[in-house]
Length: 279
Image (cartoon, rainbow, N blue to C red):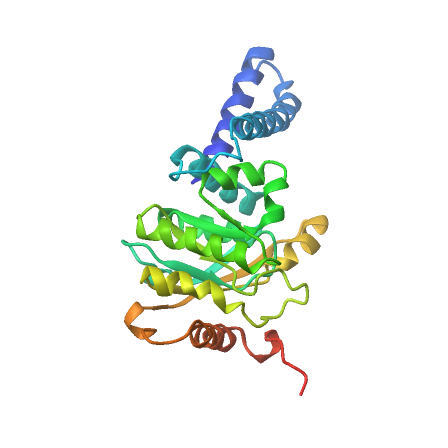
């Protein structure tokens, strides 16, 4: 929907400028219109970027975020939708009808690329996902501040005590019905495109908050950066494999839960996309 609105705006602006300059008299509009379309597209990009930038300037990242901000969430989700279109990503989904329509949950997914959150945000728009991200994300231009207003939580992977504080915050946010939490349990982008072992401590969030675990996989998002210079489409697969209810992991340890989720992802991805430990 967003892309059609953008295209319509570009065309209307271009037609308006063309009419004002040439009035469609003679054949001059045949070259004026394409120029106006290009100029309108550039102008909209500049205006949108300025909107993102000014919005980010209004964010104090040192101030704790007490609730999800609808405007910033809309801004980020719109950016995600536009990004998928501009980057020529074609997403093939499966199983999204299983996504909980009410109540909070914890979503887990494998991690291949910095673009992974764009896919999740675009296809889980009504779920109010707040991501757990590495603490270095706070210093990323625009991204860190926009994430902050969406209640995303930063985690220190090198300090267990600080990491536990992040997990406790996520449990509290779910219990207070503020957001659902999205986690990449591998903990980092592996770089080899394979599913790696999990850091199972994050499953304490679902365990303590007593909410379902939504298990997903992504395939091929890492290919976008290779295809873009050649203006090629990238086909991405986004699968929702199932929803594990709290009663299904009652009494299990976080390691057991992690192993169960890992097995579901591994079965969907296939053995060629799963990291194998050397014997």
